[in-house]
Length: 348
Image (cartoon, rainbow, N blue to C red):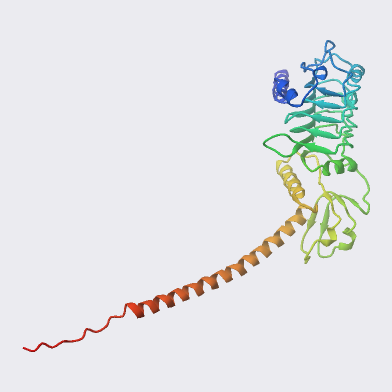
């Protein structure tokens, strides 16, 4: 068992190495970093000479079990830092909170990761002022006591990666008591480039109201469509089945639909991913099923247009063929008709 645990820790470290640059000098130069506010050492210990007076700091911050600084010391170290240019990894610590970075407003990593993982005593993330992230992935995972994210000020997610235009948000294996508040989920949903496919959580139980519905919604021929006109968010799934609807005007105020549920079922995860992508592709923010309905109607209309156009094409081709045949027949009659040879007599 110990061998397996050791192997897992080694593999985790290998994976996280990819989240920190080997050499950040070119990146920092590109960003125009002030040398006085630039840190080349990534591991944080008591011997670190950190520019605590700087509001914008260029550094790859890697805090792990080797960090010998207390939360009070870390808070003092980062007290003035509002903007971080560089990657951020907090992994395998005994820290109880991430509030030592509460003043942080922006993180720009240049297609690297922001990771908070394997912090077994951490109860809260604490990044209450974080509003902008520029990274490849934001991972908050395997913090077995974490019950609070508090990323309510997050507004923008950018990706400098050449391979993806979105930022992966990964939230999984937190405390058994962790649940996703509606307010937090709406913050995530409002961020255009944030991919929520790997958010594994349950919603915090709450009552539905006129604009928010908690739970799955099934609309059939017996449903009261008017009751849905004021709904803006469905925290669950939406199924439209067996109706004679010709439009979705009753969903005109629907902005978000987001089913959640802790599961290890890969098919269900893929389903969530598909739902998320289809939802994000929708201008009006209708649900997956609503979009599927609209898509089917669009395809049906497209087929009708194609059939109509094809009919005109067939008729047009037929007319052209008939004209060509007529011309050919006329040409043959005029120039290819075999005329009888006149007989001639020879007088001997």
